[in-house]
Image 1 (cartoon, rainbow, N blue to C red):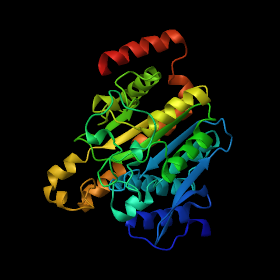
Image 2: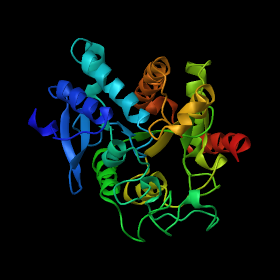
Image 3: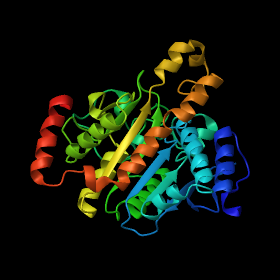
Length: 341
């Protein structure tokens, strides 16, 4: 498949991406959303679409590799893509699920960062802080995002300028998710805390976001379906707020451009446990936010597949669990505010 071949690699993740997409080509619509050009290399940002081409079909998107150092997110996604490719070769029930839904993947949004083991992109920009939504309160520590210098971590980029990678993400969401009757996204990261966290907006404010009732209802569904799951479900702002959060911007835009049926999530894999069990990896540039031990990496590659499948099933059944009227939504929102705000 010529569309998914590139010449130079400095990362096993990007090599594996090519292999997985090659095998998946006959089942999926694979395209290049954007190319990140440097003096020596050209890095494609791939989009993979499985399932219904009907714009209004329920859609679920997965995004990985936003921060190049957190490449395990891309690896987990590629692991699931491999599994889906195998299911499509023999599982008729899974094929039936895809006839009425759409799965969309960007396995490596920041291929330059993944190839060079950097958090930022080629311009030194932290992509997750490249948006225009300002955090509340203003200012704050550097990690919230700044425009001082690309030599410092968490640089937001020049004011009003979106990076290529950011525009590629916006294009995918607008084309594949906004037209849907209901859509969700899962952005897969590592690097914060000792527990696996499932975050929802807002990331820029401590205020409850308008769909907090739906987020709470989905949490209850996860708790009831998998009572022994290990995820902490909470708004991002329970831990910190940042400037330029892309998912907050995409969510707020969806309220203006669509009926407001878009619900973004972030999976933050708790990498502090990996450091605790293997402290020496803190001295490895490529291993700070990555499970270095082979057995631990294999465990992570299978650890979250149940969650991915749950999200797909809940997408298909969204009319059964989403609030059906204003009264139910108000009641759920009140319960959510008791535990989260």
